[in-house]
Image (cartoon, rainbow, N blue to C red; front, side, top):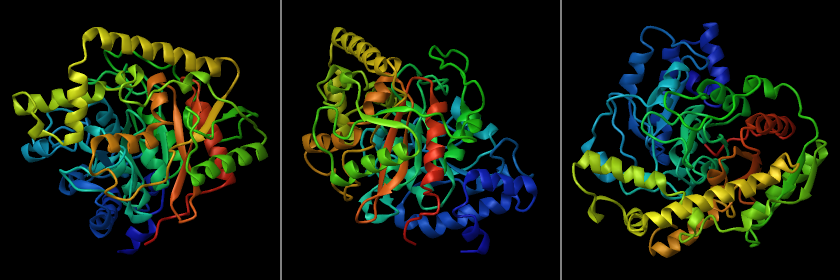
Length: 477
């Protein structure tokens, strides 16, 4: 690779934007360096599935775009993020073959553009974002840059692999049951799931559901800057998170006051987690204690309700995004979806939920509302944060999700058991790459704050990053 491609590979987006603003590097040069890395490195990891290089070049032909990330190369997840004039497959083979072009940007995509990010393509995602791995039949598996035989997790596996491998400094990601945090934990990057209503899901999606979107990065400051650039409601939003008292980037400037933090080192149902995941959360607890915080074994008792099992009413309430994906596919096909149009796992879930009576679905929504209030009460009663493993197991081998559908669901439960509850409650949660396993794989830990308290999450995350920097730890060449 060229000198510039090498020199900027591990720079975060904040530093790359500064290079462009200072005139040391042009936006066009920065883009070509990213394209060079994608061409050289992507064949081994399969993170980028659609290359929009000529389109990206047109965006910087007249100089750098404005905005806080002006000129920074960027990648968009291939799931429910329409970009005007470009295709979107949602990880589905039928949509991939149709290659229909989106007519308009989503609100979030328009904000990415306004922030100055230069979108050069799309990243891989499992079909309809239904799995905790990124191995769609349409595009093939994305491989973990830390070990090419391991999964990246999902559903934002392509995005996290691209950032972890240094193709781009930040990438779009979304999270309906853990899809930002799980791959962030398994690939060693920072992944924040914002509060419900923090970022508009318009104009087609509903921000009142469990799914939210933001991105993944290698530094806390990039995550804070993205949140500053993208936050806020849009026309027609019904759920709007309270605005922060000051820009999120200012939360990184000083250490937070001592916090009261609960520690959950087993699954909410009391099952042990993998020893590497347990050690990661205990090591983080010790570090937080050294930094002056009070950490104790404690968690919301309401978490012990099943929010993962397929028959759970709380889990049923989290299925809205899949139904929306099927509606999108039907509109594109101009007919009803059949089993031949989708992968077996997607069809199995769809078959189970589409026949559920409206009464049962209404009860599931009511159960989710009760669960949300019961869980959030723990923070209202005096805790600042909850510390958990992000996942109950490290990254599994590629191909682990092949075979029996019940076994696939059981395996997936190991990866959403700590993440899905906070999609149901709408609280912000972040996965931090503070630990690595004995065999050199990233092991993420999760911090969860009260609703709308991303400021607390980012402040303590920056403190942890200063105390135990991870930015210079990179995967094997």
